[in-house]
Each structure stands twice: as C-alpha cells, then as structure tokens.
Length: 348
Image (cartoon, rainbow, N blue to C red; front, side):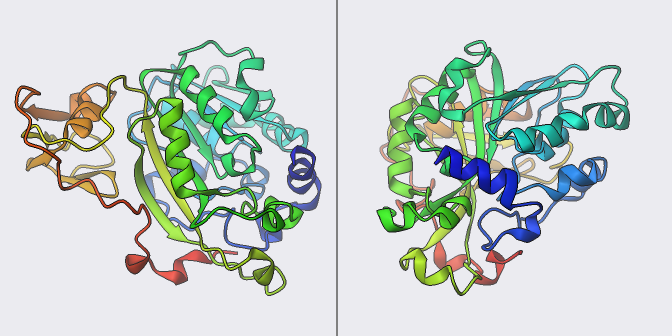
C-alpha cells in the first residue's frame, strides 16, 4: 500500500483536478482569516493539496506543531504563519515528490511571512513509524493531519505514535475519511479507491475504539460531511458503503472518564479568541456563546481547564458532587446524516 500511495500522489496526481472523488479535497468553507494565510502560499504548493478538512485549530502562536502526511506543505505553511517566528512546524511525509515541492519553496515562504529564518522542517518518513524519526517524545503541543491517516496500513501505530509525541494537555486535531461499515477487501485492495482515500477508510466505531486504546479516552467530533463518488466507473466498485469526511479533536489528558458524567459544572467563554469574538465552537455539540453560562460534563470541563484553552474561559464548579450521566455531549452515532447536505460532498 505504501508503494501504491507513493505512486498515486507522486506520479499519477499532478493537481487536485486529477482526483476522481470528493474524498481527498476540502469543501469546508474557508474563513476569511485563513484565506489571508493561504493567499501567501506558493501556487505550486496549493495546486498539489489533497486535504479533506481544515486543520488550523485556535491558539497556536509560539507552539510546536507536527503535520502527519504534510504532502506539498500547504497546511505546514498556513500553520507556520499562525505559530509565528517563535513557533515551529514539522512536516512528515513518505512521498519524496511531494516533499520536494514543499522544500523547494521554504525560502519563498520565509520571505513572504517576514520571518528572519524559516520556522518549518520536513522529514521523509512513515506516519506509522514516527519512532524512527528524530522527534523527541512529548515535544509537540498540537499534531495535525489532513486526509492521510486513512492511507496508513497501521492506524493503531499512528495513534500510539501521536500519543507519545504529544505533551500532556496536547491535542491531535485532524481530518480524515470514515466508513459506515468495515471496508471489505475488494474495496480495500482497489488501488484507485485506496489512493482516493476510500479503500483505507476506517469504520467509525473501530476508529473510536483504537483512539481509546491509544490513550485518547474521549474523542470529539468537530465537523462531518458525506462524500460523493462522482466518477461513474468508481461508484459500483465502492460496494455501497457510505463514506464521510470528519474532523476530530483528541486531547492527551490522563483520567478522562469513559462517559460524559455530570458534576454540575459550567463554563463561560470570555470571547477573547481573536477569530471567535461572539461564540466558540469546541465540537459538534458544544457551541459556547460569549458571556453565557454553558453547562458541561466533567470531561469537557477538563479539556478546557487543562489545555491551552483555559485562559479564555471562566470555570464554575468542581468534582465534589456527581449527578449521573450528562445529557448533552451527543448521541452514540457520530455522523448525523439527516442534518447533512449531500450537495456539500462534491468539490472536484
């Protein structure tokens, strides 16, 4: 599978226009603040972008970030602007042709960003073998990935590696493709479907179990959208499986509970994050209006209180009294198809 992916992204695809489904391309609405950052990214880097979501979470200034499967470097160079000259962004990819594009434009971006020296690095390597790279354990504040984990033949190793490289309180914020059932071998072994990010997609419940086994006790879904296979030749080869693109945030916090428990706690968002003055969307089930008391479960309280987000909230309550299960963190099924717009799945 490594060789299939290298060939697909290094040779067969020359730009996003060559994709045959809407899986590996981003149709999420790009906010105005991010458009300004992308406008400074070199056109060749942009042309060879194959992501499926937005992986620029809030509050990154001065942080150390790792991008898994960075490709030609679009997200690396967007993040490099967000971390600023005192932060650093490291990209890892296994496709030399993609990394060549990213490396060829380091000085262009250093100059465009007004940095005295480049704040990005690129490593050739496999995201399921992060231990083989010269990366210090627990040295990253945030790890991101954009439509790449599905391409790895060993997702469990990827998640274990991410957990080991994150600092306590750090976050894995990533977009990927998921299936509504386990993908059969006929789909998994189809080189085009695999290259298009469908053949290697995890069944969503298997992903949740793997994430918890790796140490991420309470994965949070941020956004999701159904994917459309627009190529009439590929559609019957997909086996009738429903695919979704989804963005998750996973925090490295010891002692998170396996369920959302109610301790009578609440938070108040201060409105102090520059891009979010009126409300803060933490995940799909938590949109917090500025200045309004917002009841939360114990896990959410800790995800806000024990991470880089804490300075932007007031915290009400503690863990002295338990009131049972908290009804407010979403249902068992992560993807709400009824509220999804099927037209949103096509961008190619």
